[in-house]
Length: 478
Image (cartoon, rainbow, N blue to C red; front, side, top):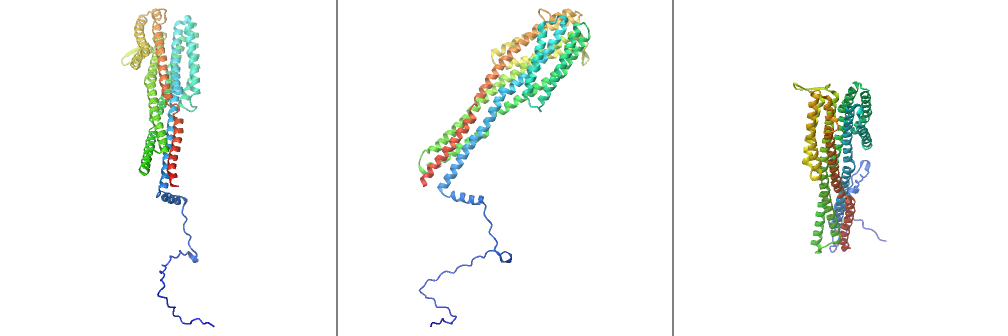
């Protein structure tokens, strides 16, 4: 029977055996109250992903994957921003041609039609029972034109906009004005002097309420037109900057690839560079052409149209005041300083002076013979008009009312002939400038055609090329 030793002396270690190193003391987990172990905090997915990304960046395949992702992202961002910015500019350019400028012209036509109707009404009143069918038809045509243009403007304006409120006001005032004119005609045919009072009241409603409202509408539509130009013409600097950055990144990636492999070309990266270059050149050249066309349409179209519209309106107001000078027969006066003038004759002189200024501006803006000739003819008509008006005023002031009336609405060498010639020449000039505007604005809009969609498609192809080019390098590590 074997007995274990009872001695507490440890056994002797064989000196020939190696000695194991001592194990250091291990830290004990923190003890929670009552002896429980405190759980370790869990790491977030973001932190783990960041660690993996950091680890991948220490290897060449990992670096290539990061470079490929960044290149694709840059090219796609370049295409997306280009598509977004050029879509906005193309829409604004289309609005200039198809919406805001036509509405601005409609607003000017509303003003002109109202002023011409007022002029035709005063001319018919002066003729009394001898009012011609042409004068009556002209008045009715102007009223219809104003009503139709108001309907069109209402259909194209926002319901809660200031323009809508102005249009509603004009729609309310138009039948009131027409009723006053009809009363004036009725009493005038019967020989009652109260007819002149009704006509002056109608003219007051036109001059103090309707024409200011029409002018306000015209100014608002012009502001809308300028806003569309401001949206369509600025350079897309964000897209251009992204395009330059994408090309620089692609060039750096190809240079890096050459330094590590001595290979001059990487087909995928070359394809991506080519598509980004095409988009950038298309963007810069296309927008520059569009900007040039739109600026030309404004400088040689819109500006000329605005001045010609103002000139035509001034001539209409002058003609109306000339007629009302004979209708009122001195009943309305205006005191300027120490001098007293016939109110309507004073306004005529103010309007004719404005007409001369607008015609001078139109001559400066005319950039070809077709636009300059009718304006020059209108200047000559205005000069003759002033001479004949002076002669008519001389007859009226000398008590020769019938002779003055004959010089204003008679059958030969009248101020009415001069006014009609001015109006016709201005109509011709407006038609020419309208054509010039449409041509230039259409060229500007067409320069942007397809740019948004083309940039998006080419950007996707460029991103695919960059990924395939980097993928080609990655395949060498497998």
